[in-house]
Amino acid sequence: MKTGDAPDTSLELSGDQLRELVELAMKHIAAHIDSLPDQPAWNSNGCSESAALARSVIEPLPEHGQAAEHIIGNLFQRLIPCSYNTASPGYLAYVPGGGLPVAAVADLIADAVNRYVGVWIAAPALAQIEATVIRWFCDLVGYPSQAGGWLTTGGSLANWSAIVTARRCRLPDDFLSATLYTSDQAHHSVTKAAMLAGFPSENVRKIEVDATFRVRVEWMADQIAADRAAGFTPFAIIGHAGTVHTGAVDDLQALADLAARENLWLHVDAAYGGFFMLTDRGRLAMKGIERADSITLDPHKGLFLPYGTGCLVVRDREHLRRAHTLDADYMPSMQDDPEFVDFCQISPELSRDFRGLRVWLPLKLHGIGPFRRNLDEKLDLARWAVDELRKLNGELNTESGDELEIIGEPQLSIVAFRLRRRGLDEPSLTRLNEELRTRINASRRVFLTPTTLHGRYVIRICVLSFRTHHDRMQECLNEIRRQTKLL
Image (cartoon, rainbow, N blue to C red; front, side):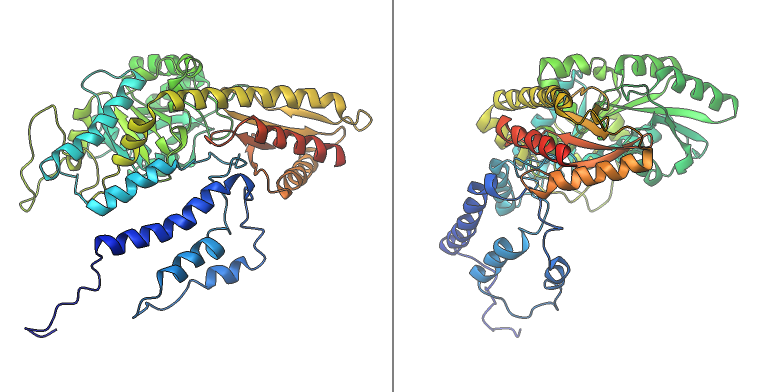
């Protein structure tokens, strides 16, 4: 461009042009949302040309643009349908992320105004929106007034930041002899977080669990004592408030007692289960969580928000500041009022999106009551599913010795089960249950995923979508009943 040439304004949109684009997108989004109950719960393996479809979006950087109708239409008609439909009421796999539509509106607003909230002075009220959300979460888990935290992209980053914080607050620069203690049911992000924080993976001690899949606290204590005697430096315990395998909740009171006796940092991974504390049953199950030094929560699980919405809260926000604060000459001045927070000083991010709005807006519009009622419903549905599976045993083939085995009573909203048949060894039982799960999922009305529990292949039902109600659970149990009898 030469001096005096007309500027290129093709990236600018007028208000009317933006409205037209949003209306075009909304035409497809609204149809998608309205048709969710009738869409398959999963469709990736069902796309016969899935590899070709994926390759179709590999292309050189385009020099010229295309029509919005073509681009958006292609997304909704061809690309989006070939996927796990995590927003479906029949998605009972892994841990669902509901994707509340209200949060999408919040993201539209946040991205359109594009405010920077990493430093308080850049957008004081908007930074405070996220700080207010964090205060709500701290109150939920029973933390004191000096608690704090930040919204992450998910539980993996929250677990990593917690371990980094514990390391920087409790250990010297030479920390390679330090050891961490967790359950053999821990999410893989715990070991990954420790590795990324600089610890050898073998320094993560995974302690066996009991019949209810809760960590054996007395065995953990024995391992800590043995490690001290061997010259290691025990420094952190990672407990669980809802494992991804079975939804098990460790004895958090006992872990807190152990951490206090041994002067260890206690972190609780409550990514899946933490928001069940909104319910009476959840609070009872997680008694003692308020004694943890840090807690991972995932609003994109228990609050049904879009993926990319996690959280770390700590009992004392000064620990986060001590672990993450670093100054630079080009940075604006930070405020020192304890009532406010510069998020760049308590987290690893400097550039960050205004993600607090996607939590704050749904809670402001709906209030917390509907979330509490939905979580109570999920607890009820898991309990109902177990009762129905047990009833089904009376209908199975007694000659072959068929029986549906519940692998641990549900502590939250996950049901783990498998089909047993007389005379089959474990490899044969694995093949039998793989076939059963394949048959159940074949209808595409529901999608169940497996796990392995101490060598046993089991099928999981994870109920955690605000769209999943009794009617879809009834369909799920009917399909289990039908396929079990046919197998």
